[in-house]
Every structure is written in C-alpha cells, then in structure tokens.
Image (cartoon, rainbow, N blue to C red):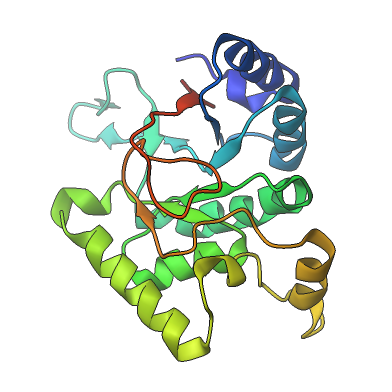
Length: 219
C-alpha cells in the first residue's frame, strides 16, 4: 500500500475525500511510522474525521539466514502484537492531547492481550480498545478483557469507562482532574468495551450495526 498516512497534509486530503463521500462515522487509523502524529491528528480533525484508531502496525522485516533472503515476499510488513504496546500507548496519549478538546474519541490498539493492557490505553486517553493479534490464540479474550475492566471500575469507584479515560497524571497529582475539568466529559461508551470489528457509533452507550468508514494510515 501507499504510506500516505505518514504525511499530515496527504492524510488530511484522504480524510476530506472520505468525508465528502459518506455521512457514515469516519474512523481514521493513524500510522506510528511518522515524525509528528499529533500534527497528523490535528489535520485529520480539521478535515472531518469522527474518531481515530491508534495505532496501525509498525513496519518491520525478517530474514531467512539460510537462504539470506527476506521471509516476506514484499521484504517488509506490518508488526503487531505485544511488542508494539509501549509505542501504541505513547501514540495514543499524544493523539489524545489533540483529540480531547474536540471530543474526538480514540480506539486504542496495539498489543492488547489483558484487561490491564486495555486499562492502560483507557487511562492514556482511548475511549475504547481494539483487540487483534490476541484473538488468534484466544477467541474469548474480549470477554475476559471486558470483565476485567468492569472489575477495575467497581474496585476504584468509577461509574463508567468515561470517567477513567484520559486520567493519566503526568505532572502533579491533580493534573488529570484539571484536564477533565477543562475538556469536559470524554466522548466514550458508558460500559466497558473491547472493540473487535467495525461495530461502532460515536457517543453511543452500546455497539451499533452501522458500519463506519475507515481511512487507514497505511492502506
């Protein structure tokens, strides 16, 4: 595919074209393979995206040492799974700085295999999480993640997921509270949700059968 998602101006043009073509919810999947993901997010918001999916895969490669040839016919490919989680978390938090003031929700994804992983993304600013690689070896992982999130909310006195989103305190202990007061309620679901497919409606408290349009950063 064409890596147009690495360039904010081109990303914005793609989002604008998609926005013009549909009234369905538009989720823009951002690439981690770029210099400034915050600028890309800002431009995509201006172009009309309804939400973000953060992140797409990281580019990588593997070598067959006996043949001294790339394992992949295309030489390079997308890396997913637990190895990319720290990068995905950082990118989610960075995009949240741009998205939160505009109440644009984020689907955080990249290496999520447990409820604890999902909670990290929610705290960093994701309104929901996407699970991919883990489903290959545990088809019921989303149920386990949702149950774990619900248990965390009960133990910590949160009424819903929205109260947890973006509560990462990077400075003083009151930093997260100040952000919440400044930006208001996050545009999130009111129940825990591990997102596994294109069943989503912005601002809804449950999934919808309406299929959003996705503009992928590396597609």
